[in-house]
Length: 134
Image 1 (cartoon, rainbow, N blue to C red):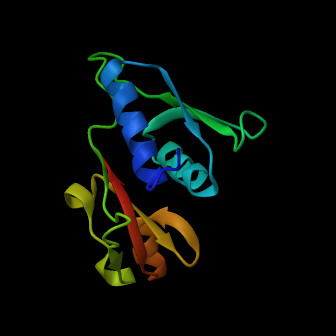
Image 2: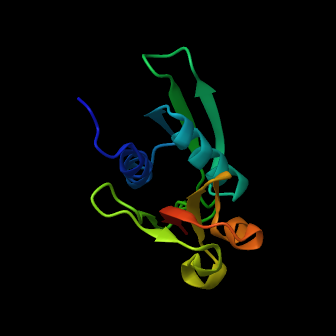
C-alpha cells in the first residue's frame, strides 16, 4: 500500500502510540522522517531514537517516547501537519510562524535542509512548513 502522505503517517503513529501509552513506536524510515526525528530529539520531545537501515525494505526508525515522570502525561501535547499534499504551505524566512508564542516548534523544510522555525528565522531562509509540535 502506497502512502500519499508519509509525514502525516509518522505524526499519527506517534500520536496513537502516546494515546495508547506505549514506550516505543516503530516507523518506516525515510531521510525526511529521520530529520524530523532528530529535530524532535534535539528539542527534547522524545527520549531517544534508533535508525535500523537493515530492517524491512526501507529500514525502521524506533522512537522512545517521553512522558512526564510525575503525571505520566506525554511530553508532546499536540502534533500537527501544516503543509499537506493537497495544499502546500510556504513561508518566507521572516514570516515563519511562532507556535504558542515560541513555546512550540515549527519544522520547516528549507533549501538548507530541515530545521526548526527559530533556526529558519535566524538564517532568514524560508521554505515549506512541514508540521508543528508542542
